[in-house]
Image (cartoon, rainbow, N blue to C red):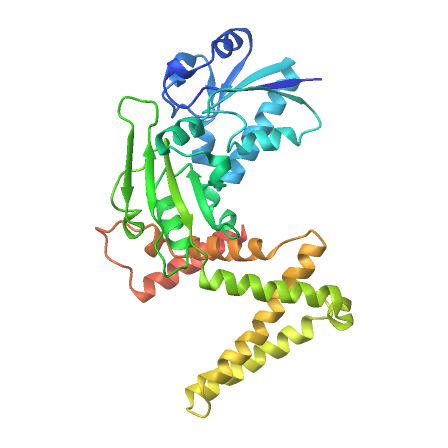
Length: 348
C-alpha cells in the first residue's frame, strides 16, 4: 500500500530537526506544509503547500486539499515524505485527515513539539494541572466546554487574536501569557491584558497563548444548562422524543409569528419586553430541539449551528472585522450593495 511518511521538523531552528528526517528527505519525494518555519531552509528541494493557503476559502479546505494532494502523490510514487512544523502528533489537522484515508498507510516520524518548550518556559506539568490544547483557528468551537488552563496554538494573525478575545463572554478577564518563537534567539515570553490581546503585539506563525484559567461564561453556562434540559426531554418525554425536523416545522412558524406579533406590540407601546423575552425563549427552544435531533442523527450539532452563524456574520461584515482603520466606514447605500454582492457570492 502507498505510504505517506509524516515527519516533524521540531519547534524551532535546524538544531531541532531529527537526523533521520534529513535522511528521509534525501530518499523520498518530499512535501512541506509551509515554509513559514525556521528549519524549512534545509529542505529547499521540498514542494510546499503555501499557495493552497492563498487559494482555498477556509482552513478546513486548505487541510483537505493538502491531504488529497499527498494521497495522490503517494499512490503515484509508492511513498512520499510530508514535513510539518513541530511534532506531527500535535495540532496537525492534515495528519488527522490522512489517518482517515483507506487508500494509503501513514507512518509517523516524531519530533520535539513546541509544547515541550512551552511547558519548560511556563514551569508547569501539563498532566498535573490538566491543560487543554486548543487550536487558535478553531478557538470558538473548541473552547465551549473548557474551564481551566489552556494552551492556544497557531495564533498567527491579528484576526485570530481578535476572534479569541471576542469568543469569551465573561465578566472575568483571564490572565494570558504570550509565547513567541520558542527555541530561537529572539524568543519572547510576556504577559498581556485580555482586552489588549489583539493590539499590543505582532503575532506570527510561532505564537501561542497560555491562559492559566479559562473562566466559565455566564451565557455559555446558561446555554449548556438549557441544552441539557432539551436533551433530557428528548430522552424521557414521549412527545419530545417523537418529534422530527418535519413535525416541528409548524411550531417553528408559530413561535416565529408570535415573536413578530410581540415586536409590533412593543413598537406600538401595547406590551412590555417581558413578553418578548418569553416568546424569544420559545423560539430558542425550537432551535435547541432541532440541534438535539441533529446530534442524535449525527448530522449536525449546536456548536456547528453557532459556528456557521459566527462565520457568516464575520464574512458579511468585512467593514467591521476586516477594515483598514485608515478607510472611512461605508454609508448605508454602499453597505446594501456590499451585502448583496456577498450573498450572491455565497450562492455560487
